Amino acid sequence: MAELIVDQISRTEKERVTLHEISFFMKKGEKIGLMGETGSGKTTLLKIIAGLIQPTTGSVTYQDKRVKGPDEVLLPGHPQIGYSPHLSYF
View (cartoon, rainbow, N blue to C red):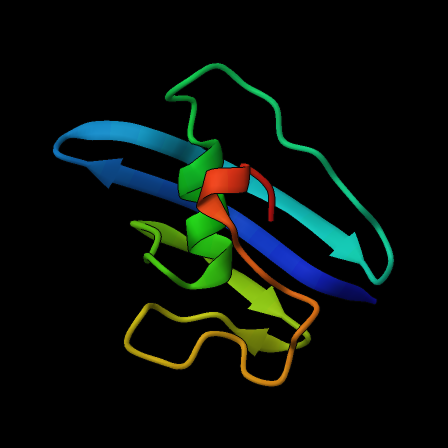
């Protein structure tokens, strides 16, 4: 069973598509790396997964709960998840 499901995430900002239909899932204990050129959407994807911003389309589910936007508490009770933008990893 997947712990994290990213389903058809897209994000458009100021008429610029920053992410287009990104989908993947991760099982407990799996690790992934994101690589890409500057401006390719890595940080945007991580912010969507963390619930800091909302996707234009698509959804993120973590432990069977849909991750919503910044109006709600960010994944309460999960101290193993963190986001350090200055360190460039999640």
